[in-house]
Image (cartoon, rainbow, N blue to C red; front, side, top):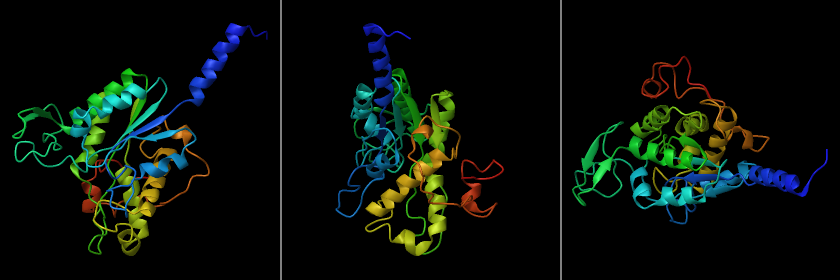
Length: 283
């Protein structure tokens, strides 16, 4: 085959487009570098790049919710960097609770899983639901040619107090609601909460409590690394189906959990989980 200068340039450009693929991570302090900025904690986004074969850019910021990340223009800032073929991972939930109608802190989303709206008692702005903000962010990334992975939030310390409590909060399910509502092959869901829960159940009380040096939300660097490994394992094993990131996980994959259930069938942890209607909560 004869290559002309123009055809060679086109081929090199195509190769460059593949090798330049980047994964952007949007989230809160549980993902952000330095975690809670207390010197003892870190976010799992710090370590995920070590587990990928493509560049990872951690755009997580402590203290943010889907709402405040939107209002501060941070999703738009990520979209401005995204090029066709990139991947964007979106994970929020820890700071999204509360009500904007009662002592609004600028982070609380309007309660609900659809098009409900609230009026902030602090600013008078119209506030939308978690699902709405996530859907708008995903659509923005899709418009730039990216694929999107909606990841459920990491759990708080499920062994706090010495007994296991694995029930997910509502934002875990809301992330799946958003993915389903988008109904796009370019948007997939990964249950990071479930993946870490599986791991915590296997690790046990002493080991998990040791991962939380100051509170029940932010983990030590070791805990953050384990959460990153749980995420990578969930992607690699297609825990919730195949995502656009599956082919970019570094092998061999560290298997941090061989557990398949949050608890025994019929337990509250399983009954309350978004996947409770399936035959098996598999990893």
